[in-house]
Image (tube, rainbow, N blue to C red; front, side, top):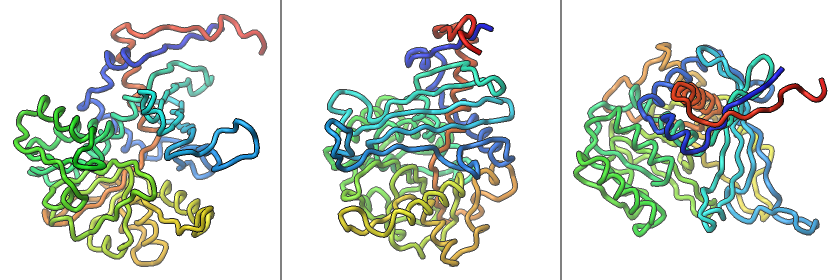
Length: 382
């Protein structure tokens, strides 16, 4: 039996609408609805793991062995199955190295494979840098339709890179009153912050004020919506303080949210995309011990892990941490008070990559774009 599959490079993906924020938001809504109805599988014994990560050691006696010589040096495979109208299996796979920037490359280089659920045969292989960034950015915007005050005017983008650029494109679709945007990069002279400012000026003329902030506190204060998408080393982590957030603020964290004042989350509405995933992160954190290989105290820096810590220590009940999928499916309320502070942790799942990859694949077939490749005409061995 002959097996063909469609290969989509990055220009193909753009033509297939990978940057279509409205469609991506709705795909994420459908994905979370399916997640809430348990019509999915992820990896691991409880089917709730983000993926399998391979890290390199700090040193090795083997000549030429790859080393962990900077942040984000890893490979990761993220398998999943998503049901409903998608009924597709597959995985996202990527390699990551912060030194890529010196080569003019993105930090991570990603691919997504879609596979037939029954045979396992590939049906599509696609460039996934834009796909992954777009689905990541669409998730908080989708969540904002339930959690943010719809008259929000001030949006703060902490970490003004690719993820928050895609998130911005999606926020602007669901929060039409935004007229002030704060940016916080590594410094006031951050190239990414300056580039983001120019992008906003060109694309969103309705935004009256664009403010590049010097400190994390400045970025958080007076913001109606805070969108955090930082990727920083341990030594560069800044601590967030709850008193920086005004009444009614909605805070989305997709990257690094470092806080030591866990008890101050108790007065907020805590929301997660996948509680089991953060439980796994916490279990792995505990298993690695309280200090790193240099004897330095280790700190977790993911918002959802803060929520798990509060549950594990008996400070809140598990049901007080709300599942975003239950909000989407009408089982739990979203924002219930204009003045409540909402903290939402979005770690991302390969289900989202499959959904948005499938949508782009279907559109590519409609448009007749991409390259058909042959795996075999007949298998050499069976």
